[in-house]
Image 1 (cartoon, rainbow, N blue to C red):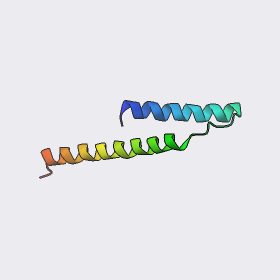
Image 2: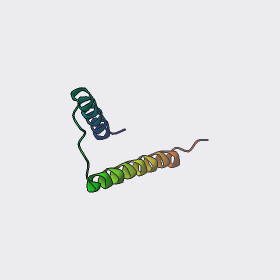
Image 3: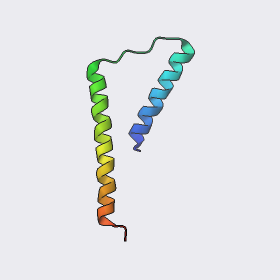
Image 4: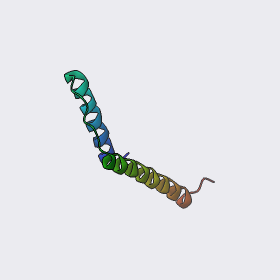
Length: 62
């Protein structure tokens, strides 16, 4: 997992904990943000898959 993805997950978790402790209502995300987040997740998974397949291709299992 990339450092940026880890940072985003930690930031999201911290935000959720802060809202629960403070009793504040969560921030509403607009549809554009949700779409961009979904696209980033799909792209990240695709990149990881390509890297894994490239490693298998370069170093095949005998």
